[in-house]
View 1 (cartoon, rainbow, N blue to C red):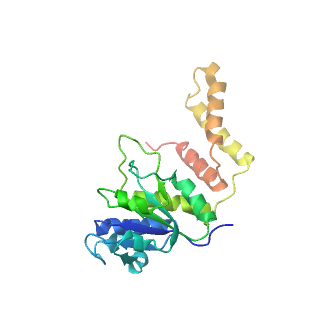
View 2: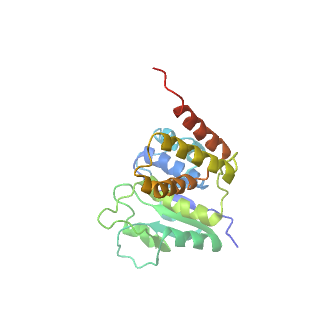
View 3: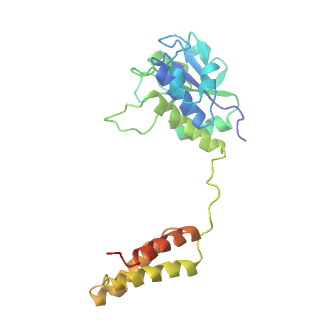
Length: 240
């Protein structure tokens, strides 16, 4: 049974208001709305956060500020410290996907904890967590910005949550084979008129390649009709 309580996002000593806004945007992209801030460097609220949030302003408006990380996660039973560095703390290590599965099945509140942009979480911060969350990142370039790190965790949580994804509406049904054959025949006729199938002994193979190319997309009848209109226009005598 899924845990109905979504995780909170905790930003520890964030430095730039712009990055806090981008983190809020990343959260809302995947359905997370509760942000907690631990001693933001430039204070709170920060005028640079709103424009970067790009519509996720309400997350910033209700963000809570704490003096310590311990206070920020006091009500959380499951705390994940996000870090790509090896620390002098022995903790279980999980991926964002594994953490998301645990959050959905374990009772109680959960928190993803992110460190400052430049230095990341300190050893003391990681020591407060139950587990370390890390990603298999390029060992020669392990630099993620704050919003990127947040969106990785939020995305994996949303997958486990089974959030309804936006769907493409008003898709036309695929064109019937008869319409597709008409388009292929029309193209072949035009190409034959301009001597495209040369040498003649290669014509069957070339036509087969064209057929394979044209049957790959799921053409609907409007697309077939549009392309046939293009072919008809190309076949008109040019005015001199």
